[in-house]
Length: 284
Image (cartoon, helix red, strand yellow):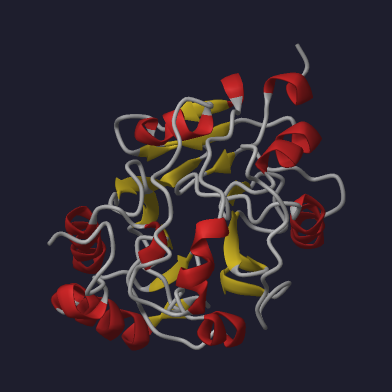
């Protein structure tokens, strides 16, 4: 059976007409760490441009495969393909182009074992909550896809010991709450963190802030976070690492005192600053 026969997106997947001022922008966070914005979400490339091997973290918005391939070849050279795709989690804006990328590059995908049901057609994510405290993006979230995609045998679980395939200097850290199997990737030697949506640097619930990319170290997107107890513990876990620089799933990269102070403040004030006052996933 060919790859295009065995893989499929959920029936609710389609182009999302949302963008930001950072769409198409790339930022070199470190010599071997590059953040690229796809509409309203970030992907990350790990690897030096003058070397053959690199990996891609997350897979962008639906119908963004050509933009991601162009960004990859612009950084690493025409025809260069990553060794693998690593997923922080499987929400639609982090796996939107993954089937086309797998077919184009013929590479494996790795995700936490608790994300696999959402990536193999078994289970849908909890529905987004358009009634949660927040602005226009939250109100429109009912239209966002939540059905599972099916990557079949192309997706594999991350090793249980915390190691990361093809990245011996990194380890994965369980940061659930936003999803069951959400992970972040951390390199202790220089404090590099790829946090996914465990925390973000733009208030993702507000349309104006998303479009303008107004910077603010914030909790995970409220409309798609079903477990606020776990989400808080995950932020506290990441703050305790004292990362030196971070790429998040939404918003620009951050580093130094801006990151240290903002992340610690978020951990300390999570129930006020991040957890919504109301919404169907907020405990009464």
